[in-house]
Image 1 (cartoon, rainbow, N blue to C red):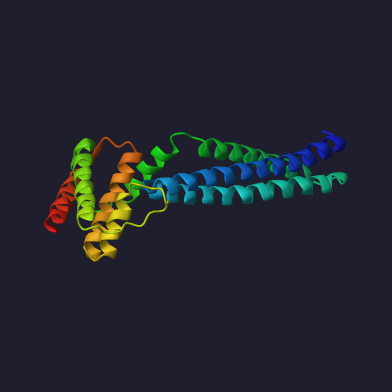
Image 2: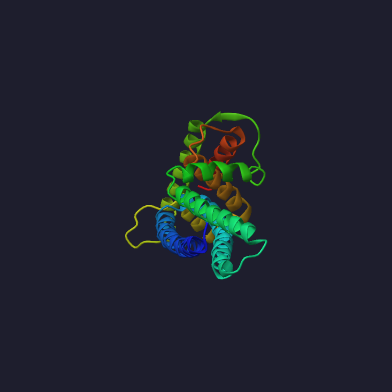
Length: 238
């Protein structure tokens, strides 16, 4: 490869990678805004959203370093192209390799953020990571059983709020229904439940969200019993 070809190849590579990453960041900013809007409308996505944002940030940080290195090596190759030295072939090979990694890494990131299964996969992963935190066991039962108990718990809480005419803060002025989290926070703020029971209800709600968004078919039997016990405790409040 002659010097002119090397000059045009690596100068074009540096410009192309810089433009590609700029478009990638612009697209990610748009996706990030859409995810924020989805979370504001549906707070059951909170844990999934936080996990996705953390994952995307880590990958973007690594991609930024690789991209910066790729552009730098390409520019150094262009600058040193006029001279002949022993390590020149090695420099060209290294620059080409890093350029390739930067492009493939960027494309892989694009594919991951537009993947329609990203919420399902992330919810399943987070559920596994929080297994100890949620005090989960090993015995399994169909998810429909858990959802039935959770809906019963939700109905009891909603009925208690209406009966006692408790105020539930809403994010939107026109919003007519309230999320589970908003309702239990209202109970705590009105001193109807203590901090320990609030934490238990939060864990049940978090488990429900991850199971729902992860499309999990078999759930922890212990969580079914905990949801049932929570509903009974709420009924005793009157």
